[in-house]
Every structure is written in structure tokens, then in C-alpha cells.
Image: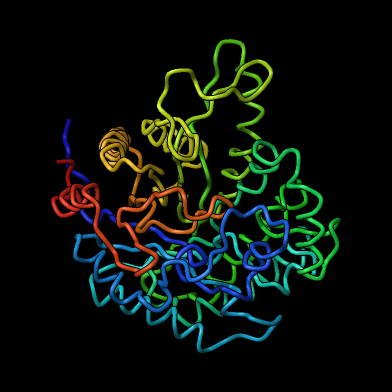
Length: 412
């Protein structure tokens, strides 16, 4: 097998603003982390202080040989009040993009990665169709301010994750005290409580996809006539959805609800971002527990790096669009298993390329050990460890190996 990746292939790592920046106090997640009966293990706090330390962090990634960096812009900082935009915040993200380019990293920028401004939730959040227009307005402002520096835009990270959470992970809800307290703190009612992660209804799905479409239109309008054009897509959380005998119908129905309907919504996009960590198994009655004897990660996912090949092929079959692996990785304390995961995952990406799939980049999740949403700081996905008592960074052996691959542009 030819181990070479295409010339111009994007090699990067990824982060999300709320997970790394710290003190994102105007966001809905910050509020939810601090109610008395919160479902969050830890508050995000200072995170890894990437907001201030990004110059050193970007230099560290460049030193490993990466040629791209996927990061997100924080809507709660950029638009702290409805219709009022912060030039200082926009300038901050422009400086981040400029720093990337100065170090030879092409910025791939996500405009929404789970967190939203507090004021948006008080207006009905991601179950209010007016949110789609407001997100389009925000996307236009961001593109106006730093679009000339960006390699590609991911409008919304994992557009299907609210639906997935509602149908698989939080089917029983999060508990009445949390919902009531969080709704009150965000100036809404439990019935209208709709932060992005909790907008798992069919209405929420439609609002999210409408927001993507309005953002794409705003970005294209802002960049009309520019050379080269700015590619726009979204990212989708995709597991390799497998059926045991008799489980095909249940698998197919769930795959339609959680993946295919979102893939079909990318029809006019420039690319699809595929984000994969493991597989899911389905029997006649629906989802199955992990298979006995299969190694589990910190997230209780199966250790299944082969999944990325299956999901890339699924996205290709349904869309025919160029693809990027915008997230792929493993939460583990054993860095040797992380290295093994990446070795197998990249073999699968190579196989897809050799079969003619147009895969244009691979972004490891994550650049750093960071805040893992409701699970706090326990899961460690990073290529670079962070001692949060000192904020010292330490490159892991898996990152050194991936650095060799990146610099050679071939699997070593």
C-alpha cells in the first residue's frame, strides 16, 4: 500500500474556544456549570488559558510540523449583547489567524462549537427560528473581520449532536433541579430551555440546519468575487453504526435520524467535516452496549479506530463532496494506546484516499488536554498534556510520532 498522502493535504489539530480559552463568562455553558445542581463535573474556569497563551501554543503546534490549526470563534465574546459586536474580540481572533499564518498554519475556523451567548438562550435559543437569522448576522460579521485570513469555515460543529444526545445519551433528561435552575439563570423557562446541546427536538434540528444555511449564504455574500473563494461546510458527529443480525432495521432508522438527514442538508456546501471516535452496535431493539471483551476508552467508547474509514465512506456515498476529518482521537491515560489508535485510523484514511475519496485533511482531537464538557477535566484527549496548576505544556510521545507522519506526509 502506498503510504503517501496527497500534496497539499491539511494536517492539523483542533480545539474549541470554551474548552481551552478560560473564563468564557458570557456563555450559556458558563451559567450551566455554576448552578447549584449542575450536571457538570467541573466548571471550566481558566481552562488552559489559551485565550492569552495562544501565541506559544500555536508555535508549539507549528514546531511539530502541522500545517493547519482548527479553532473556534466564541459567539458569546464577539456578540455580548444582541446586535452589539465587540471589535476587540474580533481583533483577538484575527490576531490568532495572523499568528497561525506567521507560523505556516492555515486557519480552519469554526463559528459555533456548542456554546452560545446568554442572551440568545433567553430568547428561545436553538428552538427559536429567529436564531438562524441571528447566527447568519454573526457569521457575516466574523467573515467581514477575518475571512481574508481563513482557509475554510466550519459553520457549526456537530450539527447532529443535540439530536444524538436526546435520542441516545440524555433520553431521560438531565434532572428537574438542573433544568429549572439553569433556565432561571438564563432568564427563560424549563419549557423553553434550549441551549445548543439541549435542542434535540425536530424543531431544534430544523433551526440548526437553517442557521447553517443562513451562515453559509452570509459568508458567500461577504466573500463574493474573492479569489480564492472561501470553502464553507459543517461538521457531523459520525460513529460507525453497525448492525448485529436482526438489527439492520433499527440501525438504518437511527442512522437516518442521526446522520443521513444532516448529510443530505450539505447539498450546496463545499465540504463535509467528519468527526469520528468509535462504532455503535445495534440489535433488533436498538442500541447495544459495548461488545464484551472490546477495550474501552475513558469515554466508555469502544477502542475502534477503524471507524473513521467507515464514516468517510458513508459521507462520500451520501454527499459526493470533498471531505475533511475535522476530529478524530481517543480519550485515554495510556499514550501508547493513543499512538496505536492514530496508526490504525490513518491507515484507514489512506485506504479511503486510494479508493478515490476526496479527503483533504486530517485534524487530530485534541491539540491539548482540555475541558471535556459535562465530564470536566478527567478525560484526556490531547496530544499535548497540560498541568493546570502551572499551565505548563508537555508534548506526548504520540504527538512526536504524528509529527513524523506530518513532516513526511506519509505514514511512517
